[in-house]
Image (tube, rainbow, N blue to C red; front, side, top):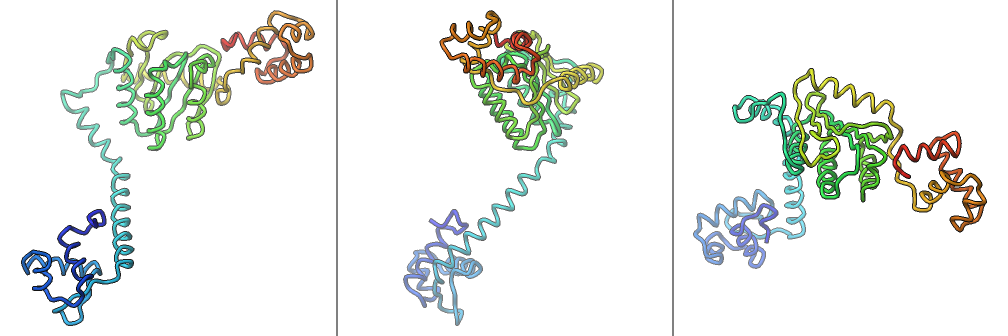
Length: 317
């Protein structure tokens, strides 16, 4: 029972004997535990080091207070675990050494262009490159994120954010239409990732440590595969393209409009008068106008017409 606190079964048996029958000698303890005297002596020595038994004359032994014993053992165990955690946390420095060996090996020699086929292989490749990244990962989501891939993407992103990898994610407004994507983007921002939205053109790519890039072979269908690009002359323009898109993007990507807001937007695009629009939607003119004003502010548009155009650009209507 005490094994998880660093005490062996034999040592625990000896300790329990000294609790039940204090003042016994080594021979009596060995007999009670069914072991030889040498083993009993070794166990008593270890228990004395742990403060679990006491002796006044070096010939007889008594178990010490169990409350104090358990408290002491727990503190020792916690201290040991903290040391292990520090060693594990500091093991990150091994990655570069291992990566060098991998790059040096003929089986893992880096190529300037590598084709990855299929969605599963693309996800695995992103995870592997993220693991070896040491500073930053830049990601774009130009269209709806496939539901089948969302859980894997979320798990990977959150794992590397916890590890300390810096992330900047650029999301097209229409990508928020996929189930759960808005919530996923909000979670990334809450965990420290930089997140921006855009309604403009956006290419599908991931850039690792500004040295390696992964781009979709078919911008409209990530499931068909991707290219891993390592040549500096090819990575540089991709990096410049990301930074250009990032500089023109707006703040953290917002959630899609509510069903009521979508109905108002569609009506705004067709109906000029508030009274007619409110009547068509079965709401009061005051409520309709409130929705209109809120949408104009949200879309940062100069007018109703401008709001309708902005909504179309974001693929909201």
